[in-house]
Image (cartoon, rainbow over all chains, first blue to last red; front, side, top):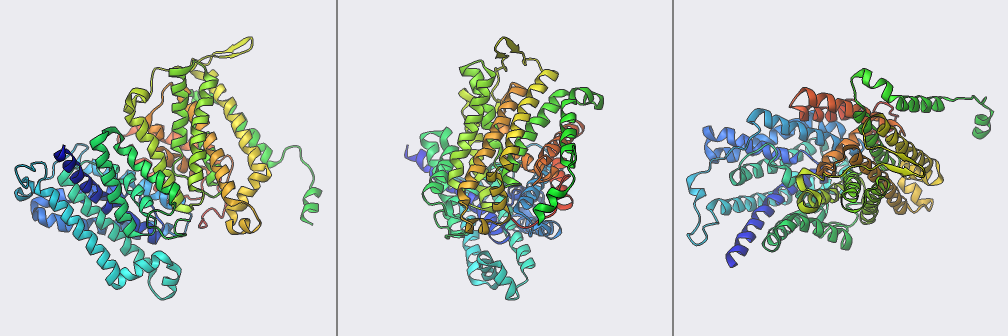
Length: 289
Length: 327
């Protein structure tokens, strides 16, 4: 029993880590550009597939570094060419746009890499279990959690310490003032969109090693990421972080007791939060209204 | 002065609006005559009516209250499941099934609306998406009761007893189409009356300037909540009709993809116009039917339609100016 619980807790941490990376990217874009990126799960799949294509030439480690960057570049191109045209319109348009984009990207992945699942090769060192008694915990799981922690710490350090990070945080609160102070808001939003896609691409590479590749691999992560943002509180990245971990762990622990309720429990958490604390656990007052 | 001027205009028997209305109803009533000539079939027309009704109900919220729900598939799907489950497990009666479906979706929307009326813009939309998906997972995983992924089957719409007459709608074809059209007409009429009432005018005032409406003493949250609730009831009614149309309730009717379809139908036809969503539904259903019969890459085409509409055609077919302004 202890092993079952331990297994599910590690599972929960890993799923939660994916929710966190997805939700942080979504949250960045949502906060600064007021756009819900429906295609975020497809940027995740894109990152995974690019790593699959690149790893024979660059090796796994090279692909791990390069494919998130490529994903971010593609994100920047899409933002520059299309999404920025609709920032100043009613939010219904940006939603419809990214919704359509998600369809196109999923179909493109199916067209280029085929409809069937593909396995992602891992370096031998990563696929070993850490000890014989903890056979269900491979080094890859430890590695994934470590990478996510590094990425999250890196992101928060970047947002707190760098000039661009400061501008992104300020723009979240009051974009107009930031613009008046002479910051090029258009470029800031483009960069920020790319940053969100970078996180999605990174989680794609990591997820590919765990669950393999398929054209809709990001879909199952999209809705829980929305819920992580709502639970954590819109406007607060720390809130998103804890929201993601909370629902990941809650879903995994419910699996121990009653597997078929593991999806329902994250919705129950969302409802409870909306009922008791509508702005989310760490949301700022007035941010969501 | 304006009032005096407008009443001084000569009264014509049929104004432009009345002519449009007559044209719409003539076109709808004569569908069984002309649709087969164009290669369509009556079930397709039924689908247009049902999706059109759902999109018009959504537009009550989106176009006339200025509040974006991206989760209306939930109430549509709950309507479908409510009707299907009633027919399958409880009672073999079409009107009761419609009532049950409408109540199930409508009440769920009304209760959820209470939780989110203070949210605005994309945040409101995000809450509606997330909540809507709850019902998809429920239908998906409660296999024994809802049929799970395969959907709810094994129910049939029943003939309706009207005193001495019996309206047999069990066969498809024109008779069932006219049954749908009758329900559609009543629903559209009620929605039109709601929009013309002081309540409906207040919704438009909130859409135009929420802060000013609030300063005028209008309880904005209560109006948005009521609008959401009414919209959910009509969407659920459409959903229950959809279950009757197919004799089948599909978990995909609960999926947020369908919510996106409703929104794009509304935008294609023209938000802020009463009949726009019906026209949008007609265009979208025909395109979807055509494209999915032509290519396996239909997803790309549907996605490209979404992107095209947003970038190049945002006002829609019947659209008006001012739609593009930030909400």
